[in-house]
Length: 312
Length: 246
Image (cartoon, rainbow over all chains, first blue to last red; front, side):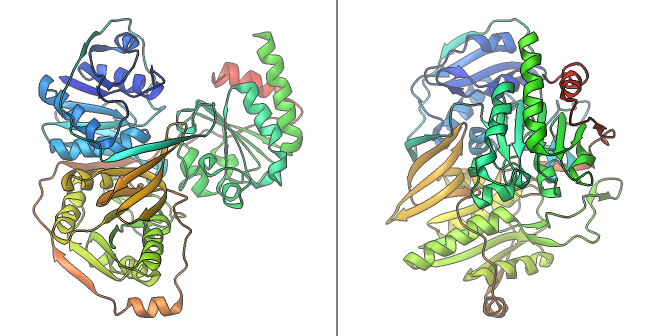
């Protein structure tokens, strides 16, 4: 099979989610990665891309021009499968491409498709509380891979990189400004997350959460009430109506674990819960639990981690 | 200003998720349906605010059967002027987007609003597909929307922050948290909603590009391992050697 993978970059570097998508695609067929702008695409071959098409004339992934780019690449290569990461940009472009190609779209894929007979993709539904097996009936297929659900594998190949100059029409949207959340790893991509809730009693107490996150190299998050009261910015809110995350490690302090919160985090590989209330529902979803006061436990955990890091 | 807001029903956020018929159907037993939170709290409410400030109308559109009417009435109670229901069982996002795009094409709206995703399917597909069918720009994951004349300014979520976007109407957006605050319908709104127009429109033919063949529940978690608060070295050791996450 011939596969197109849409690749995103930031400051010239291919995003982690795009490496995941390329590696995923390479398990399905021969991957042609499609990207744009000023990007260092050499590493894509190591993750399984055979070819890379770069459109230097496109500088930002506006939805209409990026869609035209992917559709033109599909036409040129005769690809039957198109892979996106289901990150913010993927969410803007994959549905457009699906509509343009008359292709069935499996959104939120967490595993490789089953291709014996039918083409079936396992996807995340009900905010992570269940999975759906989606059968794609169309000749052309689009898959959006959930970030952090497929470990990219370096196979050490190299890709043939060439420039394309398709006519992409004009952009309907203009980007006027970018407001950064800071330098850290954005939550949807984070492998390590330290999160806290109302149990911390006030925004002035977040220092210990940030300290622990700094030691770990983790991203900070929070529960919905904490974002709603304004103790923490909205982009930190994880849960059913906030950001859904799938880190390797999720440490939650002073969060009881309401079903809506669990929905956003239960894709985490390992969950550590710190709560004074031993009956907190979150312990049922936890791998490791500490019944104790976050004000005591977080600094102790931070010290233990510092000791561990120093010994590494 | 003529605004169209796509409304879907979704199980209440506290619903127990279970499946029937050999795990091929969502078990609706005891499930309360609500307006999908992203459609209601953010998309619909912001559309209403814009019309209150600038004049115009807010129409809601739903692809569904008569079973969706109570949810549609709820959106009318919050303040939409009228509602359209495309009379069909929604098959997949492509099917729904095609139906809505056909209606939008014939009726010319300034902005089509969708929620960023439904809380049951989490597909985040509808807005982009509608935009492609209408050949209009699409602003996904919009957290803020203001409009002056025919120029809209939006904030949208991107990796590591948010972008400020400018776009001319007509366009399509998906609304994320931050765009507006939830409104609780009052008794007057609920009474008025009973008599507001709900037009039922027949569906157009669309081929079935995808279908859910079965559902699965995640594997049961093994029991939580408790560690003493004074023994964080043990936790670190477990995270390193057992969970292998640090």
